[in-house]
Length: 241
Image 1 (cartoon, one colour):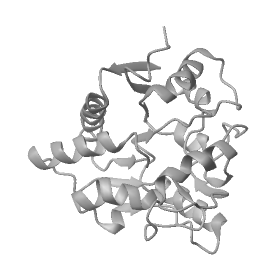
Image 2 (cartoon, helix red, strand yellow):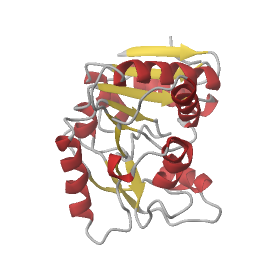
Image 3 (cartoon, rainbow, N blue to C red):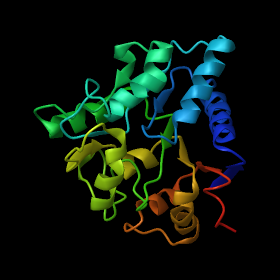
Image 4 (spheres, rainbow, N blue to C red):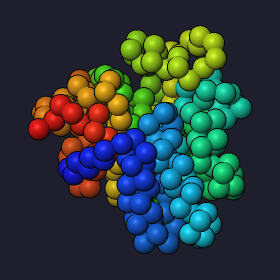
């Protein structure tokens, strides 16, 4: 586990983008797992800027989404896909056949999970997965109590996550369930980035760094990964030694 601390949120995005590019540029057809949420927005801004200004060839990049709210897909404002579309896929004009994202409006959720896992296998596994950190230690929609052996699955959303998730919507939403890559799927990625920013996350960052791995704090289960990098701004890092 490597902990990288940057002084500001924007510097956090710049550093994460630089490191991600150095890894994917060394792979012929990288598979990148982007997450939604306010934290990775700085990463996507920096990544898009670098790619376009430096004329980096990204025509061979593929993407698999981390998670999606039940009952939503990219057509829904506030959905995970809608966020990644706006911040990353649309600015880079990523072709649809280079993207695999959970469809929370699908009739068969079990089939959706199989479809996503098959896409990952067909593309040689995830090269770099970028995830955030929930207030209760969740990763993606892997809430407390999720096993490290779990692959893509239907997730029940914890009460705290339901409340925090409302910030992405213009009106209240009933966020009861979702679809997510499992911890086992993420642990199979070649490189695993956890991005965290802000004062509000300082206490959970401290717990993740210092506590013994446990299903009650899902992010701690990632500490067994061979290349786990935790990217923090100074606010999120303020309580760790």
